Image (cartoon, rainbow, N blue to C red; front, side, top):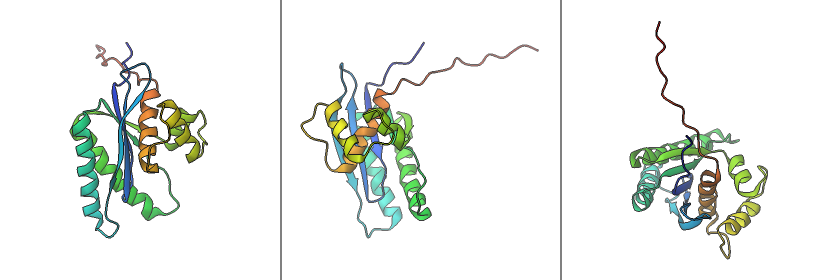
Length: 174
């Protein structure tokens, strides 16, 4: 038996300066945008303070919507190692918030997000934003761009086939 699609998905685009999020409902025939926005942190604040603000902001979004699934953009290799490590910290507090909320977690690689939304894993940011607006029947893409990215991540998880579940393993008698 295959699990059903999630009814409500929160997609999150991690960042230490701006973390974008999008909430998509899949309860109807077509996905619908419920809310999107960003969590901003002060550029001059210490990293620990910024991470606390990200965690608090995402906890608030998850508490308001109680999603079935939280989708987070997966880690990618950056040219700057420090940037990759700091982004990993932001992803960590977001994953913690999702775990604390009890939601199923799905990580989406950037190329998978592009492919799910546009049909091409090499799509440009403008193409992704255009298709997000088209799929959700919006007059224009969500703003700012980080919020649109969060919505695209939510759509990736919402439109992807449900993950299969395996039966519990049985012990084989010896």
